[in-house]
Structure formats: C-alpha cells, structure tokens
Image (tube, rainbow, N blue to C red):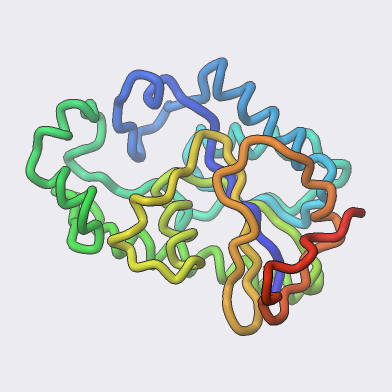
Length: 230
C-alpha cells in the first residue's frame, strides 16, 4: 500500500488560550501556527507527495496550503469532511479548564470508547469515520500511483491520535497515551498484512528518505537496518 503522513494543523489562538474550538468557523492559524506549518512544509518539500487531503476546517486548509506551496509539482488536493474535527457538541467553544471539572472529562481521559459528547459525536464514531477515510484514500493513491506513493492527510489532534491508535492495534481507550503536537508529522504505511507506524509526533528531521517510498514486509527481528537514504 501507499504511505500516509498525518499532519496536525499548526497552532491557533484557540489552542494557545485553552479554548475547545471544535468545528467552529473562522479559527485560523496564529503567527506561531503559521511558522509551525511552514516548517512542516519545508520538511515535506523533499518528498514528492502525490496528494494532500485536508479537513475542511480553515486551520487545516491553511496548513495544507503551506505544504502545497513547497511542493515542486501540483499534488491532488481534495477536502474530505470525514477528516474534520470531532463534533464536541455542547463542549464546543468552552474553555478546557472549565470542562475539566465535568464528570465526562474523566471518562474522556480513561474510557474514550464510552464517550458521547452532549449534542455531538461519540469518540468511537470519530475514530471509525477517520480511519475509514485514511484507508480509503490510501488504497486509492496506491491504485493510481503504485505502492511507493506517499501522500499527506492534514487533520486534527484527536483524529490523528485515533488513526494512530488503530495503526498501533491499540484499543481506543488507550489513545490518550498518544501525543500529537501542532504541525507534527506522523507516518503510517498500510502493508498487506498490517499497518506499520514509521514515526509519530515528529517536528524535526530529514524526510528525504521517503522519496523512495516504503516497502514493508515481515518485521525484521532485532530492528533491522532502517530506511534507505535517497
């Protein structure tokens, strides 16, 4: 299969102030967030991406554009609503410090699979739609460009954590153990027998080795020699 680079959007003013923005419109990258997204784009500039699929929310589309601006070609760049933020319902627009005092907060921390946000989405449904979207796009890119294809998906923290949890084979109740920082890059290769998480929550480092694509077979006993340089 192809290889997907999961990109969280850069920081927003809502992130910086502790506000749960959710799906609210008009939430843009702040100055720091634009710098973070530009650095992610610089890291990806050495990787010939075949596509950049984005959540429809503004902060993700801004991050996507900063990535696309640094690509030598013109990758396919659709928007997919299945990669949008979790629907936090009545929690949207409230401060995290206030939400942390509610009983549901502890369930979010310890048993996410049981969480249904009041007036919103369950975390299990969030994971199901986002994982299905990533796998659908991955299969389509592999079919069109071959198994060495590399593409990017620009989305949100909880979305990316849920996709990584699925790739790790972790129950959703353990996904709070995963960290995904603003404009971080995580890399997943969906092999024929299982997914391989190549990297998680990275914000630095050369990615030019990805220009060769990834061919994942049996896991090397002892860890192997790593990826080949271009």
